[in-house]
Amino acid sequence: MSGLIDEVIKRSAVWKSVDFAGGGNTATIWTPTTSTRIVLTGLDISVSGASTGTVLVFFGPGTGSWAPARVGMYSLGTTTTISPRFAGLESKYDLVLSAVSNITGAFTINAQGFEVP
Image (cartoon, rainbow, N blue to C red; front, side, top):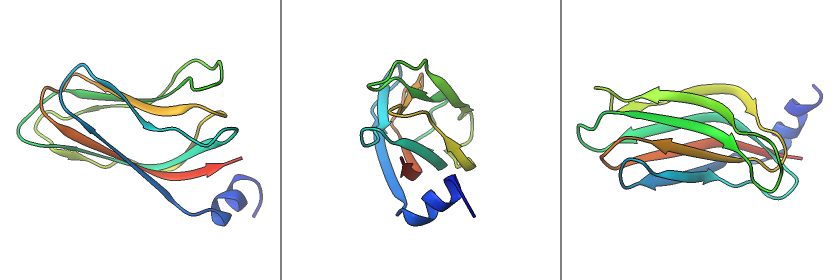
């Protein structure tokens, strides 16, 4: 094996979590260590109650000057938990993982992955 796979194997998994209180909020889920990239392997989005709406998850500018990159738009309609998995969605250096939502109820986003140089 070589490259990204070797780097991921050497590292421990990282788990990040953020609770949202209501709609219209933008929150940072994961800020990587300086000069590293996030390799995202999964998300868990859980809504409390019967709220509906969407969650946009994206890699956005941290200390770098890169434009935001969309990870996914998730609709929670009648579904209360969404758990997309990724083979290793990789960000550019120093981008943070963030989310914005119009869901009016409380919900939680958990992110799983690794940080690599």
